[in-house]
Length: 300
Image 1 (tube, helix red, strand yellow):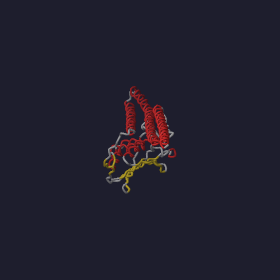
Image 2: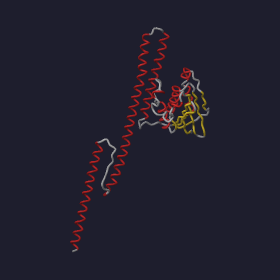
Image 3: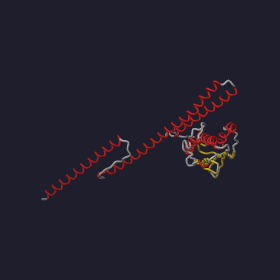
């Protein structure tokens, strides 16, 4: 009698085990089919299972976490690719404008016999060439910054000296536009942890933005409060109500209204990226009719 009972129990156990194995095998086959589908299709779907037995549920969770991470990386890569593509498209349009202008002025120069007019056309041509050079440099820098492998080597930099050097490098531009900038740069020698070339580029882009979009009234300040170094560049603006300070660091912000042939529309976007990569912060605000860009770093 006992043997019959044991035989029945064994038979039932084997049957249950076989049923479980069949269920697990069917579930694994279903998972494989779902993975094949996900590999072939552009979808954000996740795995579904009917059972959690034999750690099937844990396997599903691990695979779904991997899929979610892969989806995020794929979306980020697609956005970056689209952003770079849009950048090239926008700049291609911008570059055509000075190129067309160059072609016209070269033709005028070719046909002109008056020496003073020839010099006038040459000056314009040089200005257009400089604009094209600046646009291409901004494009290369923007593309470089969007490469995850790009790294900035940081070291002790004398921010006060770099700012003064950058300001005075615009002397001819100040003179040409009849601008006498208001300077309030502390005389102390101040050091921060940064990349000298990148820091100079930040100052150039912010000052150039004030030159291109300002109303011929520029103020440049540098001061230190406790350990924080504050660099402020401000300028008058014609229509402050039209400026959205939350968007000024976006590439091509107000491209149609605010950009000119001398601007790529990437300057402040590049400045923000560089500042943040060096551990600083940058913000914009309006103070009445003045547009202010403030950069902050922790001093040494």
